[in-house]
Length: 476
Ligand SMILES: Cc1cc2nc3c(=O)[nH]c(=O)nc-3n(C[C@H](O)[C@H](O)[C@H](O)COP(=O)(O)OP(=O)(O)OC[C@H]3O[C@@H](n4cnc5c(N)ncnc54)[C@H](O)[C@@H]3O)c2cc1C
Image (cartoon, rainbow, N blue to C red; front, side):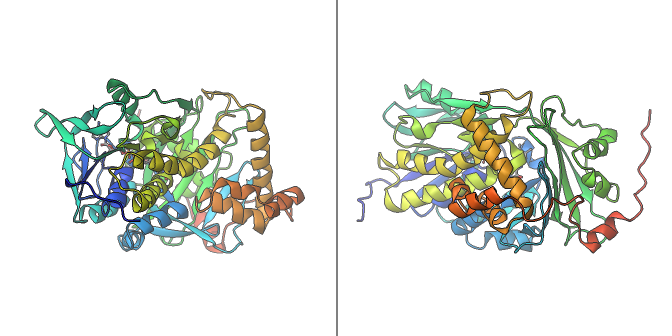
């Protein structure tokens, strides 16, 4: 049924022009007369770092589920990224992954994919596409400082504008996409809104990342290498990964949980990689050349704010890291944002954006993919010895045992590899892991013994057999 439109021109204001904000703008662009994005930063017209996106200096991979959602929002956007040099890496064939249960085989059908790109390059392609939409506008250098309205309805935002002057901006819908640092709970309290329950599980993960020039010949065909930590190993977890991001570059991210964090010190970077559960990343880095400084970052706690269960004022929605921030090692943040933005559009297709029921309906749908990613992350992170937040209960322990059994089975079972990959890439919801055929396969276990060495191709082995590159000796 066609809904009556309000008599005035309708406007959605999106707070934050990061990935969630730009995708939210794409989602709403055909459903209101104007979408206005407000960002505190200046959003550059080139792929460069910016102060309020420090996480952009760390390796980002976009799983197929998130990439598919972006394609639905902005048809052709992934091809544009690829045309700009990003890599489409087949999954599982293009991944050399060492799980707590052992190496995953790569000899399956490449049913999925991931996109490897520098985060700033990726954001730029998306931003350009969104800002070219006729109804979308952006104002940079504008800091949002509060909401307008009351407990029943949000009617806009209070900002410090480009001239640092206070200003109010009216809106029929406000979407908070200001990321981990979102002040929405305070803003809601200021207008008499509800208190929003929140849970944090913090394994104290710190990242150190660096760009390398790939060894000659090892850029286009190089697999993702991912040495995972073992949350139940009783020690701080160490992760080491290489993602080939196009242009002959590898983006290398190392991370460690509380008590085992990497540092920004040059001489310790490759040593840290060597001390992961397997030294494969360090062996590859010894054949590559560092081409950037080391960036470190430590704001990585899992934090979920249950906006979907609060009595929010009408006209207010929260998306992306502002609602659910995730430990980045599982690589789900961007995909959860993209799927959330797609959910926003789905609701806008059937419910007028200015209507009082739009916000709550959208919030509930946005929460679904984020909740799946949350379960996958905290289901592991609660087990690290120095993790802060709710300790694992009996349900968590049973769930973790089942996931451990699945990953063990996935070392050699087509059925389980497919269903785990469906869920890890966020193409399917977590319930996929409990289908009968998956339960039966998990009960049987892997068909062959676990591999005792990484599954490398002759080409990859040849690269690793090259002589290590000379490193300048540290000055004292
Ligand atoms: C080290 C690291 C590695 C990661 N790796 C991956 C990965 O491999 N794969 C993956 O999918 N995800 C990864 N993530 C997660 C991913 O970066 C986030 O999920 C994603 O950036 C969330 O986007 P967002 O738009 O919600 O928030 P943000 O990217 O934080 O953007 C928020 C925006 O809001 C603006 N803003 C903030 N406050 C205000 C204000 N008061 N007024 C106006 N503007 C404001 C900021 O300037 C910024 O532009 C990683 C994260 C980290 C930290």
